[in-house]
Amino acid sequence: MSITEKKGAAAVSGASTGELNLGPYFIQHKIGSHDVLDVRGAVPDKNTKVISFGLKTTDNLNQQWQFVPAGPETPGWWYLQSLMKSGDDHYVMTLEPNVTVEPKPIVMLPKGATKADNQLWSLQSTEELGYWYIQSKCAVANSVTPLVIGLTGTKADSQAVAGALSFIEYEKQAWGFRPVYL
Image (cartoon, rainbow, N blue to C red; front, side, top):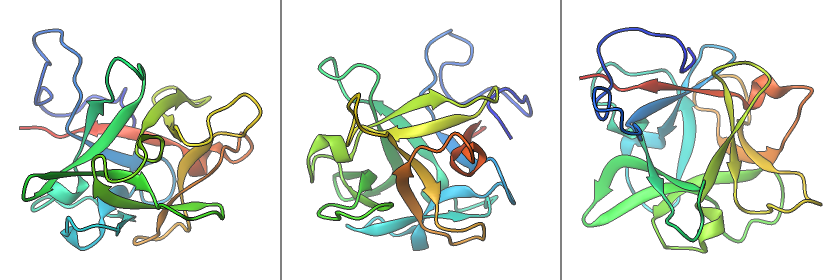
């Protein structure tokens, strides 16, 4: 499902006021069974892996994501924050720190627990309307291939990873955003 497809009621926030709706969303993979990004085991702990999983109809806070602006110093970059909390900590998608190989695993860490570039993301359009690459701020330069979110496989429970952008197999790295309805 893409963000251009309409189903159900109005989105939770900003739908009738014209404000930018920053979520929550299910982040849904374009290919295969259209699994969504999921915090493994619904546990908001440090270094919990982000995986693909079938959309759950209940108890799905670990599948809901909010876009949180990074601030005026980095316009166009966002934290992808889980709706789950642990104490006062807000957990966000993060490139696993100190990993030098690609693709880099994506884990959950408290916002600010590592350098910001590992926790910031932007959206880049694919060649298909309604689907997006989710690009990491890490390794953003004109001479470096962008890192975007993909999966290690096509089955549920595949690890979410950030690897080099591929225009040839773009569907493997394409994501749609499905609003969470009331």
